[in-house]
Image (cartoon, rainbow, N blue to C red):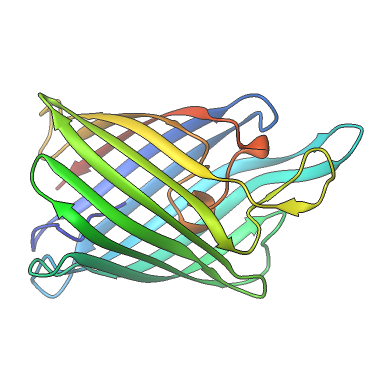
Length: 226
């Protein structure tokens, strides 16, 4: 996802593939593109997409349809002089739980620490729909030599983001991501990141959704500036 700290003329793009085994047994392709607006780095526009086939999980207790796609347009604001960022968006999901509707989404962060070598923030994100889903959590990063370590954790504070494999009923599952980012310098501002995560993707709705059972998968992403 495009950072609000982008320079005035920055255009950023990226791709991410996440593969999940266990109960999910799906791979997700995430794509992102965005740019700064109004000749400054404070205001930015970003388009995110997450794509997977749809399938069904079945056991003795439940039959659960999962997978699908989500496309989201975000308008964000991250002022250089203040330690917060805010983004509002519109998403069009096509999943088993959310389809044939338009979601209003948001993301907000307050930075308790923000330096070149380290960041730490309190975060919230979610979707305001017929069944609202709001996530609260924390995220941070720390640079060790040529590698930047990234981590985040969160949980629903309103709404359900998964389905129990033992009862078939909606439930709440915690979210986490652990990543290591390396900038090879092949192109301007490019970065590879390897992830261990149970979050399905980069759109707000998919970031709020864990793989079935909350089990982690492995992902790799590549982002670049133009």
